[in-house]
Every structure is written in C-alpha cells, then in structure tokens.
Length: 82
Length: 331
Image (cartoon, rainbow over all chains, first blue to last red; front, side, top):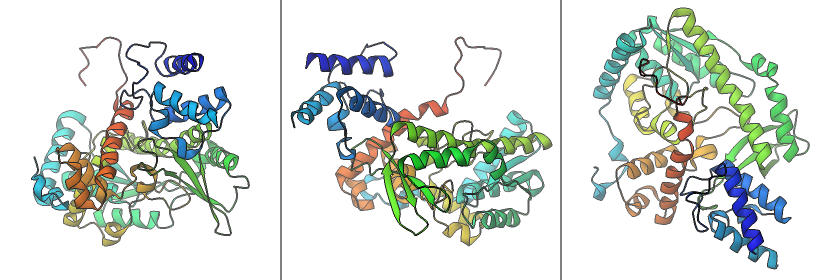
C-alpha cells in the first residue's frame, strides 16, 4: 500500500506540480487546490488505468474516488479487492 | 447586494436605454483615447451576442464605421448565414462573406476531427454528424467529462466518453475554427485601420467559454459585463430582429445541433445567469434553488463548478507573462 501511495504521490508531484510538492498533503483536494482541471482528471484516470492495470468506469470518475491521494488510495483498495 | 428574500429573474433586469448610453459612451472613449482606429469589425454568427455587439457599435460609431463579417463553414447551421445577413441588413452596415471551409480543409481540420471521432465511434465518417457534450456536473459531482454524440446516417445516436488523447485532438482541431475567423477579422480590420469587437457575454467571459487567440481575442468587448439575459434585454431595446431573439443559444461549432448548455454550462443560460449572479452577490443556494427549480445540493454543485471553471480557465485571460515588467510600455 505504501508503494501504491508513493507511486500516486510521485505522479501528482511530477505531472501537475513540476516536482514541487509544497502544500500537497494526502488529503489535499486537487480541485480546491487548483492542481487539476478537467484535462487533469483525464490524465489521472489514464495514469491509474495504466499503472494499476484496471479500467475506471465513467461513473467512478467522481471526487470521492479521485480528488485527493487518500481518496485514490481508498478507491483503489475497494476496486482491487473485488 | 440584491434582496435575497425576493430573488428571481427580476434581479437581472436593467434599464436598457441607460445601459446602451453607457456602453456607447465607453466605446467612443476607448476608440478616441486608446485604440485610435477609424471603426470596428464584427464577426457575425447570427447569434444574439454578435448581433447586439454589432448594433451597439452602430449606435456608437454609425453604420459607416462598422464592418460585418459572415464566416460560415461546412458544419455551420443551415440558418447561420441567413441570420447573420439579417443582422448586417438590419444594421445597414457593409459586410463581407468569407466561407472558411477551404482554410479549414487546408489545415486538415475535417480529417483530423473525423479521425479522432472515428477512433471512439468506428464507422464514423461521410454522412454522419456529431457534437461534443459535457457531463451532468451533479452526476460526476464536480468533475467535468466530455463525450461525443454521433448521429449515423440512419438517425441512430451513439454517445461515447472521450479519453484524454481524443478529447485533446478534437479540442485542438476545433479551435482552428475560432482562430481562423479571428485571422480574417484582423485582416479586414487592418485593411481599414479598424479595431476588432469581441462578443462574449458575462457568463462566457467569466467562465472561460472562449478560445484563447480565437474568439477570445479582440480590442473591445462591449457586453462582457452583461449577463446573457441582460444581452437579450438590450437586443429588444435595439430592435434586433425577432428571429434572432427566438433562436436557441447554440455554439454553431459542430455538425450536430448543440446548445451551449450541452457543451459547457450544464444549465440553460437563464438558470446559469441566475446562479452566477447569486454567487457573485452572496445569495444563498436554497434561495436560488427555489427560484430556478433545482435542489439546494444541485445549486451548490453549480456554485462549485463556477469556482472551478473560473480557476481553471484563468490562463485564458492572461496576457503573456514577463519575467520583469517593462515600465515604459503601458498596457
């Protein structure tokens, strides 16, 4: 799980924050912090699909699943446990 | 601050006569003191915003100093040219016709667009029509997703969500349209030493519903401070033809008819106007909900979406950023 979180965190920092992690906490809302826009959400979905070899369905693309590192981890735990 | 206890569409009522006088005064001031040009060019789409902007320019400078441009392309609506000509005739201005289909073909626009759509909808091509629609923000609770809706020659409708690469290809290619039109507007402006009028209303301007260096580029934007329902009020006062007043708000960008509320705003403009006004004036979601027939939760989603769009489209409003200011240049 720690490895999963690190992969996600590294991707967010590298892809959206140009390597500067200042202000990014595990619970930080990507939307509220202005880290991602509608294009960024699609980038995030592509990354998670590829990295964790899953297929996120349209109705799973909601803030509860993808709007913070913690939310993504929770979502992946539920998704991968099935 | 509006009276939140009587919140309704009445909050957006303006005095058209006073508003027109104010805009005309500002347009003349800008032209004389800032732009120092001889007149203005207006791209006419046959929609309410460009029609009102044109009529305001005529009020400010007279018909002899306003030039209209009709710039349809292969995907434009059947009535687009008829409507835009109605405006130039009504305003008694000179106008030029430039079908931009050839320019878009030379940019490979139609090929790029069709290839992108056919990669998600196999078989898409000759005889099909399509449009891009946005998700219901209450459905995806703050995330905006885009889908393509395609209509087969037999009338069958197919809807598919756009993955990242295809979404960006369609967006980038479609932006050729607005940028091509702007190239022509500045060509005609340069020919006559004129300035270019931009036609966004407040909803579009605030929420970033424009293409940078496309329809977002202009020298003056006379209605950017007005909610769309207020633009309609000016249209009535200025005598804009009835058929333009009655025309549904459309992007007129895709081959399949597409309302602005399908592509960007989620709600019809009358309701979006009220939500934006309410948000700007501190009116609580429950009062807005009662006024426009949504739930309080839905209005909260709309408020949140307004904030997100404002933030994520800030880039569109930025001038080129300088590492150091150049104080000798006054912007």
